[in-house]
Length: 216
Image (tube, helix red, strand yellow):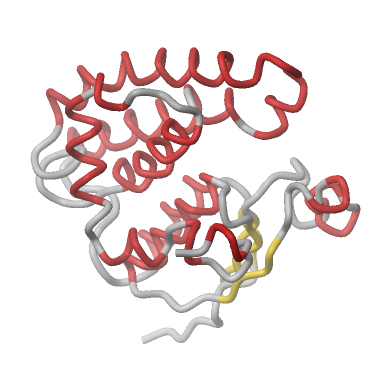
C-alpha cells in the first residue's frame, strides 16, 4: 500500500472552506499539519506574495498533498476521496453523486462567496443585511432540495460532501443572525451532523489558531 507524506493545510479557523477540508480529513481519519493564515492580522496574511505562490487567488485554504498544491476546497475533498481509504464522501450511485455535487455547488458557489470576507469588506456598512439576504436566498432554494434528497443526512443515509458543505454554512448563517428555524430540514440536518465526532473536532472553536476567547 502506498505511503503518503502528511498533508499540510494552510487555513483559517473560521474559514468555511478550510473547515470543509478539516471535516473531510477527519472523516477519512487522515493526519495532517496546519499552518495558520490569519485573514485579519497584518491586513490579511493571505495577501502576501509568499502565500500567493501557494494560492494565486489569495484565499484559504491551500493544501499541500502528494507533491501538488490544491486551492479549492471541493477539489481537495474529491481528491482525498479518490486517493484515500475510508468512508466515501461521494456516493457510488451516479444520481446520488450528482445530487451531492448539486448541493455542494449551491452552497460553495451560490451562497458562501457572497458573504465571504473579501466581499463584505467591499460592502461597507451594509454587511449584515447583505449577508442575511444572500444566505436566506440560498437557503430558500436549498430547503426544498434537501426535503427531496435527505434521509438521515443531506443525500440519503450516508455522510457526503454535501454535509461537509452544509454545516459551515449554517454556522455562518447563525453568525449573521439568520433564523435557521425557518428551514426545518436544514436545521434538523445541522443538529444531527453537529453531534458527529469529525464535525466536532474540525469546529472553528477547536483549532490551533482559534483565539482564546472563542475556544470551546
